[in-house]
Length: 307
Figure 1: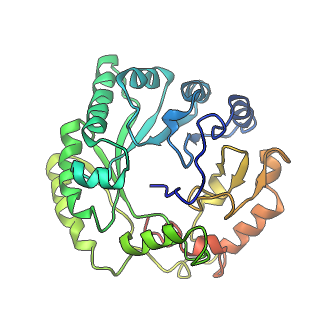
Figure 2: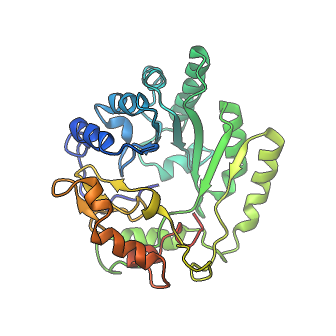
């Protein structure tokens, strides 16, 4: 769940990676294997999303995205399947309308559930094994008790895979009174960090998943990033992947959120290859190999392996 209320709203045109820039980026990365069409907003708002999926899929690239499911109508589902979408993650942070709608402002629980079931039916009608569908549940104090019910709901909807994750970041590297104060406060009250006594709540969900044959992925239990084999980074994102924002800013990963927090370069000023092998990336990778990581990594749940 991307917490973006700290930033101004962006419309679907100015906040979208252009089709021309997208094609150039894909064409310029011959070894690209997997592509996630995901930013801090809702991908189904992107005017040329289906064309982007088809362009990547036709090149043998595994392509997918995360969605809140609100706009996932049967017609869109059919077009996504036809375009070659490989996987789709649907955010469902509650098993009841009350909990889900208190987290997802403006969303309607029954509508999203109907859209998920509709996608499953469209796949069946078209005889397509893809996209692989997964429900994603961001576990927090306010919703974690509903996880067993969510597993049962996934089974009823025809979804075999549930991914549970923690909130992504503490934002402890930011100014306590600055622009990220809302995110910091929210995280402090809701995050299920290691040692908070919430681990046992996952046991009933595991039992339900085993009983129903649902694959359940739970967050890691965490580890001290300093206790790792020599030469092994606590996070390998900057060696295998990159995040490119809608305005062409290249970041080390999606977990850092805003472009103001970590920037490796801009596609308007250099090619992706030049940025990937540039000084900013080399310095960032070097620091991840040591015990003093970049500031934006210190509060990251992926870095601490609790994501």
